[in-house]
Length: 334
Ligand code: ATP
Ligand code: LTN
Image (spheres, rainbow, N blue to C red):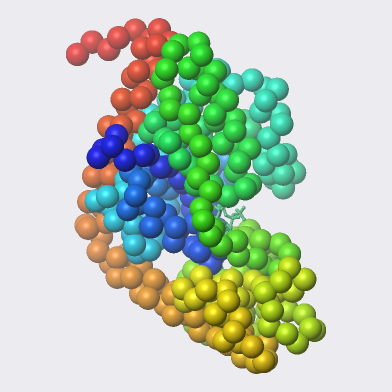
């Protein structure tokens, strides 16, 4: 691949409002990774429709997510950022891979079980085939590394199984991807139940900091954050609320855990909450401003969307053509 760098692929859905967890746990790291790897970051809008979406909202959110990628610092000249639906090879390879994936192995997918319980009125075939589309995303770019959360490991495993199966039948075709486990992948917990991860689909809005929350809302949510009655600012599992606040503080300020614990030694929870709130405002306010500015630069953003979709399609089609040839589809007449 380009510059002989390893290829890294990841994607995010534009459903719901992104949280501080998505930013500190994923997006912020994506920016750093794009220095060392050839990165492809997709707004996976085709995955989004496995759950019913309002068209206008999906369109708006998908574009806002693309803008957020750029505002967060991903350089669109270096990393390839694009809408999944703009590169038709994703759908084409997904269909082919469907035919090399067994119902039995798909039946084991826990996300499908969770999501079909949650959306009992719309258990569609796309929701079932979701991991195969994800495998197509990854395999199209001959991806070496995939940074994903623990909840997506099962999907990465099936992607590897499908790729190996295909390679065994037709000879080397796909790179077998591996999970990229970051050094300090901050896992941000819910502010209302610090034993649960902060999630954009949480029903309680006080549990999550949304990236677009205004400063006062952010301060208020931290003030209300659930802690404990130990009256000690210590970094330990027995105090998950305090631990989470310290994690957030450290991720936002770049302070080490030891230094933060030292700095807050002997101080009250109120002071800690206030400091954490301010550290988050200091990160999110400029990010929001940058999003606002970029949103106004329509032709600049349009240019990025077009150029990057073309770049992604170039690499994706190379793999797709190879696959089509191997499985016996007739050659195209030029
Ligand atoms: P949902 O609530 O719809 O499951 P989510 O907020 O859990 O969504 P995903 O869309 O599943 O987020 O994940 C997008 C990326 O953000 C993934 O890489 C995931 O690991 C990361 N991420 C999500 N929540 C957190 C969190 N609380 N802490 C750290 N990383 C997170
Ligand atoms: N399923 C993932 C999003 C996703 C993805 C991918 C992640 C779709 N395609 C390919 C990594 C690689 C999620 O919900 N976080």
